[in-house]
Structures are given as structure tokens and as C-alpha cells.
Length: 333
Image 1 (cartoon, rainbow, N blue to C red):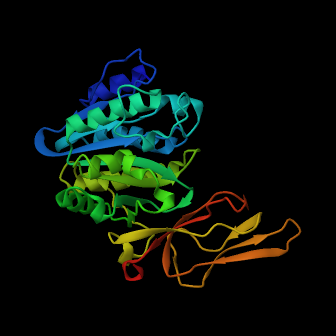
Image 2 (cartoon, rainbow, N blue to C red):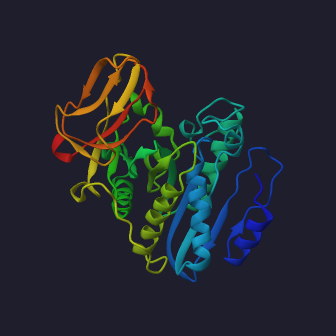
């Protein structure tokens, strides 16, 4: 996936260096930007899932902003689109291998196209040894931005956990820990941020911001603010417009435990009663499911106090539909 001529010209103006265009169909763009002074090294990736274009656009907008707000120190390594073939195919999985790229790290030199791609991406990250890896993903449209790290006990290096947590807390977002023993998180130890931090000793986090597959310009703007605020706190750029989360302040920077809502027992039209960023109490109504004729079929309630991270975009759900993502506050653990 070669960069456009106009973007090449722009990148040259801001001092970014890119890898040459490759004939390999699994080639991905790679950029480096350096400030004039020493500082932290941040590695940003996006587009691992081909149906999550908002992360790619977030990187594009960040690069544009850095034209007028140049790096003062440190270094940025960026892969704007990790999975160009999946993007072109408009699919979450790699179109040739039919595999989820974010469950294949560190990849392999001998295997499917997706494993080869995972290997090439991880080699870039491993060689860079950044102070932080940020992998951008998109959730539902009706969701709040949040950072994901792993459970402290899953890290080979306690120091890597501490550094990952510290960087996640600088984002001023809810920090959600993933319990790898839960079925919903199966295989995430081989996600890019998961493998890099758990096995590679590289501080890393996943940033969930905005929905997919359609790009929300508002969500992109918010995601750029989150990233530039982090760069400002690290002394890499000058003053930036402050980012303010809609989540109650008591839960910003707190390590929360991910919890999924039980799936519906029936199929029907769903009305979401709890909004993203809202705190709900045990027994509070999350959603109601109705028949086409208007009959109330099921009321879904919370089992304990939780922060609503987001809810599904579907108006009609079945017993297989994930409808809510929740996070349990520290007192609920």
C-alpha cells in the first residue's frame, strides 16, 4: 500500500522518513519522525483490523497536526495501516488467510500471509524497542474512549506493567485490564500490544476510540486530542487543546475490570437505556427488547455497579449479540 504523492511531499516537509514502496502485497507504510532534542520514543499502529478505518484516519490527522505543531523532542514511529489488504477488502480479518491479525503475534516467517504480515510488523516494533507502543482500535459508535492493558500477573516483567500502566494513566481515560482467562479475551495474549508487553517487555496499550466501519470525524478529533495530550505531557510537543472525557473523574486513570453484559435471551428490537460513560447501579435497567408488535420481551439489568464503556449499534439483536461492554470499578473487584 504505497503512500500518495501528496502525502509523500507533506511527509518530506515535516521530516518524516518512510520505507520505500514494496512489491509485496502485504507491504504496510512505515514512518519515522524525530524531534530536535532527545526524548521518549512512541510507536503508534492502526488498522490491524480492516474494518476499523477511523484509527488510520486518526494517524493521518495527527501527521497533519504535526506539520504546524512539530515535535520538540523524542521520536515517533508509525504504521498508519497494518493490514492494507483487509482494508481494501473491507473486512476485519486478513482476506487471504481469513485470520484475525491481532491474534497472531509475533507471527511467523513460514506460514499464511497473515502470519507473515504479523511477523513483519512485530519485527519493526521489536527492533524499535519504544518507550510505549499504542495500538489504535475502534469499538462501537456508542462508546467512550478507553485504554486497555493486561492483568498485572500476566506480565513477565513487573517493570513493563508499571510503565504500561503509567502511560495508560497519562491518557486521562478509563484503564481497562483484560483477564486472559475469560472466554471473551481468548487469544489476546497474541494481540500486538499483548504480546509486545507480556512477552517482549515493551510497554504497550490498546487505545479504543470511536466506532467502525464508517469514520466519525468527531471521534477522530477526540482520538487526536488524546494522542497530542499524551505527547504534550511527555514533553514531545507544545501546549495542546485539553481533552476532557465524559466519564466521571473518579474513574479516569483507574484500573477497571472488563465485564461483558449477558447476551439477550430473545431476538427483537432493542432500546438501549444506559449510555456510554454512564455509571449504573446493580439492578438498573440497561436495555429492553421488544417484539415487532411492541410487546416487551425482556428487560436486561446490571448484576453489579459498573461503568458503561459502550453499547452495540444494532437495532435488532439475537441471543448471539454482544450488546454492552462494561467496566467494574475497583471496589467491585
